[in-house]
Image (cartoon, rainbow, N blue to C red; front, top):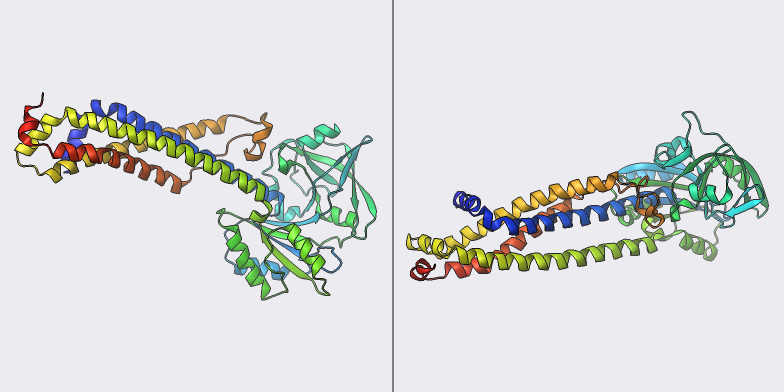
Length: 427
């Protein structure tokens, strides 16, 4: 039957040409939609993980609110025991107040986040930033180095090599300043660009923390899996080694829990990246919803087109159907023949559409959108990052098959149920 269907498909190709073009277009549109959405989602989560210390974050909650992790070995052991697919590790000290200021030539700018990195751990991940001036040298980064976004540099009008002053509040509540030298400017005008990076030892010294300590340890998952479930596993493992807080979803919850539960011993909080991305997750869900709506509308249009086209194809092949029936072919065999042809059409059209979609995605990745400030959050070095979600592409194939199958089913059934004598008289 497959051989006959393939022969008929080749012979009837001129009739299938318009329908095949529509199916190719449908597969192409679905491919681009899924690919771009996967790219945007992956990029924003990658940036968020770099900004927020990873997909899974462990922080110290101590009575003096210095937030220092006293037992790093236990935290690392919990990560190890949780069988995580780790892409990057994060070891950093953070300034949790929102009043940090950069001062240059009499002007100042508040920084939403000041991050002290252990470059021996985070160098590779930090290097993925798009530096437009300066960056990381081949040797050990300077202790007085400062790295900021292009937006911060433009507002304060400074360049790499300029001396900048960072003003923070110590853990004891006193104002302190630290002289720094601008070592790099990276491209990011989005939410994640409002942060300053420096060596964690320099930040600790300015804050009055022990120089070699950190406040957060984290991991970014290579597979981009469910960080909620992974964080739960880490919390369970860590709870067998040190005291842990109840399940907390973000930093604000950790601060609130500390205020309500004063303790004489250090406790550790584990929370997932998703808890810090509520608004961004809502935006991503909205993108998925729009994509689903567009896909549904397009699918309905394609399905109607398939049905109408097959009605015409079945009508034009009435005499052919009558001949096959007169020679003894059963109704079920006629239906199967038509449906097999439709599945061949759907499969081949889907493959062509996927190939063209991949080409379009590649082309989008070559376009620099750096000038679009609204898109900065979703771009990797100013471009749409390549993404090929295999599960979604399999869905594209399945949907195209299903569409052609359903669209061809009724016309095939009607054609098969004609009386052979009536079909042979058709002109």
